[in-house]
Length: 400
Image (spheres, rainbow, N blue to C red):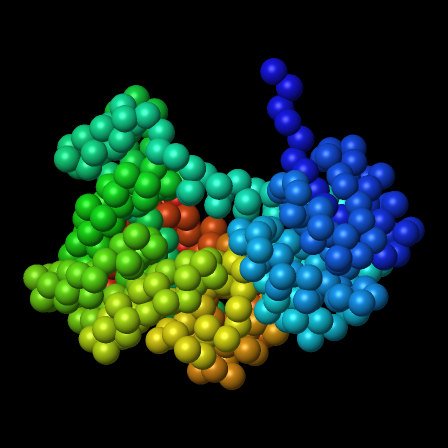
């Protein structure tokens, strides 16, 4: 069976640019092209599209205004914006309007292909999270796995960029499946979200992380922090703050040693979800971080309204920041924006010394990625902690 092509809507009043995009992207996708925002809105009213690629500067209605209209009438749309303005203000305007990504003219077709592919992957992730639950058998298998303690927590180091000191870890859940081996979150979290198992699984991860962090404190890592991802469904629980308070008391972990990570896209869908819970957690002293910053349908206004302490710069920006001026400009802008709001910045996906040096020069606060170490089992961190004053980051790199 031939796989159906993704459908792209290309909106540009420059006929030459429109033709180039249609000719190139038409080799891979089903493309429809229009030359105005009004024509695009009319097309969206009658047919679905997987991705919208639009110019910013157009006659009558601008691309920015069109994007706002699209997200009102077709929420969940994934949009890439194109502009001839090579300045950070235009990129921030696009992100604020709700664009997934931003391309400047003149562009390279390789860049267009990469951004398009990344945007479509993002759409698939959203669709996967909202799709109907898989078979009852899969749900039963997941529930049984929780009861049988098949889930394990691995930890990835987080490093202070200016000093190279390991200041904490991120807790990452894995499923040690009896026949399929070690499964990553993408293989089971969407199902756990849909069938409600995420509540039990999430609490078990929180308990494991808090318990382990307290043990590391007892080994001399008194200021060591552990970050734990909390899902939208967990955050929607009225009892989450009470659960966290109980776990902190049970384990003896200081509230300031726990950081709760929430995804940016959560607030793109519902500005009111969980804000009261986050406020309660922060009053307790728990730290709050926005994960994957810059990849959601950004509304930068939430940064000043939410009770947060840090943002995590998504790995997709870090990856090409040393070679792509546009990615570098976005990294510079995001770090400056966060610091002006008195927020810490944690860069994800650091894999090379060049990336580290760039982030250090930009005064990024912390980082994590394969350059520092892959996620490892708790005993690896424990063995490192027991080295006392002789602890070296190299040990964790080699262990991974």
